[in-house]
Length: 267
Image (cartoon, rainbow, N blue to C red):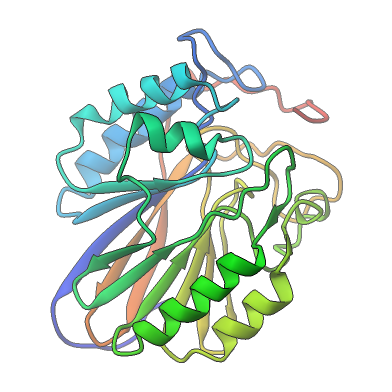
């Protein structure tokens, strides 16, 4: 998505779904997720050296263990710019806050933009949801930040992406109210998520909708049942301008020693 605009540019990089295990030998569908994350992070450092901020949109961990978060934090020690995270369905939000307090604020400023970080995870469930208190708070934040262009970041997709099996695990509870709130807010310019392990770009009225490939295993776009894609891991970049316009793109990273079970029926 590209719009003509003027003014300063603020560069945001989103990565998602690293699925880091608590042990160095952890694999997801035969893939060393720690290794692929290291490779993607190196690519971001090289290709996005002028980035202002990194944001990880959930499934940081494979199982919500403290060891997995400590492994992730150790890998992130090389990052010299501000970074934040939010939880996904494989995560333990309380444990994330305990090992890295302050990394999941509800609002992050970036230039004139305000990034709203939502927790769509539901304990013990793959699908996502937003309860009444979260939706009330979102409504308050939208009213509070009408003078700023807004981006919402979350883990679960609020709209279908066209892959039947993963669309069965999208945002469920609170979805209708969420879509109403964002549709009624002209300040919201984009909604961004992870979870689906594939690129997705669309629009909902005035709002850009964007999903991002995982730093680990990729899922096949348009699939009915579970299907693993041959595409490489990746990340997404945004160029945000203070007038509320932006452009975005996805970069794939050629990972050395990339081996994944393409015949898997699930995980």
